[in-house]
Length: 435
Image 1 (cartoon, rainbow, N blue to C red):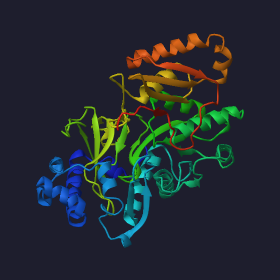
Image 2 (image 1 turned 90 degrees about the vertical axis):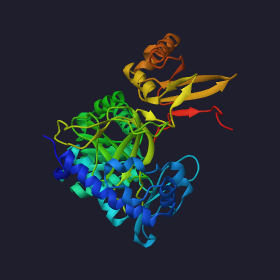
Image 3 (image 1 turned 120 degrees about the horizontal axis):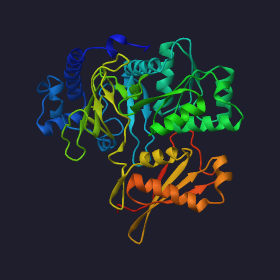
Image 4 (image 1 turned 180 degrees about the horizontal axis):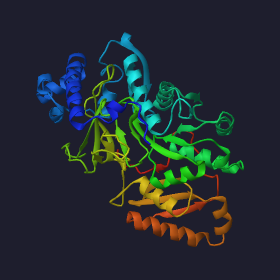
């Protein structure tokens, strides 16, 4: 039976939700226009006034915000309240340019933690559970968000942060952790380490995991569920909007419910900006309608996915977003073919390999190269050393069937690809595609 944290919100009729969103949107647009000169200028340049926005239907009149805008306005240019009203900041783990810094009032923190409480409850968590938070703490939003959500639902909270994997496992065992929160790649590593220590899922009390912050496939989900003996739930968020808890998975595992009372979602054509109908693949755009300190209107996430509406079998009526299938800015174009990391991972796991791999893209003599190093399990390593080249060719053929281009596959011995305790680095693109 499905559990709810805010059943009144999570099962609200679409008509009532739309009315609530429209009311909050009107107030938010006025708040942003009056208090954020950067966005006011964007609205003025587009010829849009706050009174032009009366309902969700008018959302398309507003200009988009992008990560480039956030970097240009860094650090305080998009702040909508006095700095004295802010109690916290978080920041992206961005690898290029200036970091994005997001601000929170105490009210913002409370609402964010409420969203994470909904996610924990949907995964079966409650006051009787022990929630082990192995996301990173600090500027990263993962640890703080799930930590706060766990407190809200009354769970015993273990603020482990990431790293020190043997200690993580010791605490899972000794303190009887029932819910694990971390990145999927770290969950896979914990499962692998448990196996290496001679333990099995029967030695643990874990029942659920809440995993996010990086892309992962359905095949990786099943692998983690088997290695840890749990049900693995997806969670979605981004620092710019608040953090994890923007959307969460229920027991049906058929998409993530978006917390629509706080975030309005749209799908747009990434090239034209045109709003696309539900059920169409496009770029996900979010508008924050309850944030006080750092409210972003029509923020382009660059995540590609699909929205679907209608009552879920779990009882929730919140719109669902599919697991992002890639990013409009991170999609690799190799020899003219669109390639997503998730496609390669799907083939690897279907073929029985571990989710430890490294994709390297380069350009040699004006031709793109695609090299994939894949780690074998201990059993595969002993079984396949004799016919290693044949096995590499077979795997390359399976990937070719998925992508339409042929990679070079390198099977490597166990434990040779670096493990990550945070977001895993799976792709290295060495091409100099820009001057």
